[in-house]
Image (cartoon, rainbow, N blue to C red; front, side, top):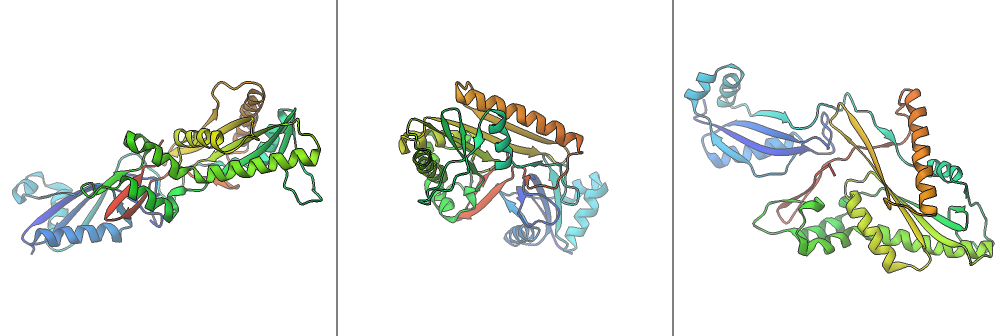
Length: 343
């Protein structure tokens, strides 16, 4: 039998390929390893965690179990202690915030789509623009009053891009800290502007594209007195919560175009603990005026109508659904960087 049983405690979340748990789960993992040498025990614990498809996001706390105390406690711990002493690596999961498993998925909600926004604009008194330009110019999506409106739906997880991972690692990585939070609330003030810049590229590209489409639509309609507007939808991305997304939109619009006279940003997301799911959305500006107010009120009304009809239909899960916010981790330069799946 082994001489000692080491106990390791670590915070972790499942990777995307875990068969049982979702990547939005967080847990405290306890490992009991029977081993003569501490370093061998640690190596086995790390290896077991990886083979179980969990990602370590904190330092491992380790100690040696005292047999007399374990015997005094008895019960399940004593059984697990003897199994570890005989060479079995014990792996225990203690959940923090969830109850759901992949064999019993939580209720989700359909994503916001162009089709839904068509209804919003129609309710607001506008219409979709469907013109074929002889010069192959690409027009904007809608016209409402004296505004040409382009819709941009963004749902790219920036933290899946290698270039983004590298930029954030270079910006925030320090050798003495092996686990770094990428949540915007935890970013040092002197690095926050550079942090935001990492997430601006798709927003800047969308604004440049919208600007060209608005300009070409004025030419197609032969009316340069029309104003331009853009509606952004941030479709539930973990990488860019509302605070980050809105700041990126604000800075990018100021710096990139003179074609856009107004803008609306709609951030929507889903959070779940496996049992209960919570769908939330924010429309900005919070105090809309003019065309912003018309479209914002129309969105609220259309969303109320959709929720009512969807509920009466039994909350079908048949369309492209909005995924809950989830934890995203990656390792770079020997450091684990984590964006936690909660705003």
